[in-house]
Structure formats: C-alpha cells, structure tokens
Image (cartoon, helix red, strand yellow):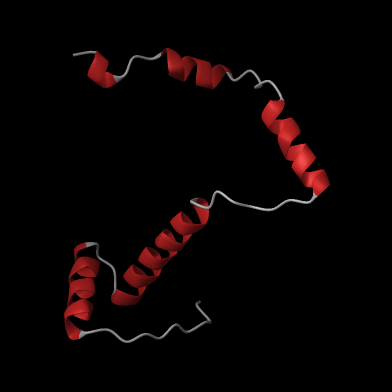
Length: 88
C-alpha cells in the first residue's frame, strides 16, 4: 500500500490527455502518472555521466575498467548469431 501522497494541479486538457492514455493501457490516472514519472526519473538518473568517488573507490573503479573482460560463453554465442535483418 502506498503511504506517501503526491499532489499536483493540471489543466483540464492535461488531465484528459493523461486519462485517455491511462485508459488505453488499462491503468488509472495515478498508476499511469506514477509509472511515467518514475520511468523518467530513472532515465534522468541513468543519464548522469558525472559522479564522485573518494581516492580508494576511484582506484578500484579504474582497476575494474582496466581488467581484461571475463570469458562469457553466452555473450560469445549471442555475438555469433546473425541479425534477423542480415538474413534477408
């Protein structure tokens, strides 16, 4: 059960647009808006390219980047497959 309230005001046209889209997905307004807002929030956070690390964590990060990749048989099989559009 949700415990935190989020209130906002919208123009009637905005509300109607949201309601129409939510209805097409079989969702109510709140679920639709919460899902859309969370998806956008995740994208914003994932698009961040600047982050700070202390010296120890930075060194560990650099070591991970510099380490040779581990063998991954599943990835090797996947990369060996031809793309569907190359089969035409």
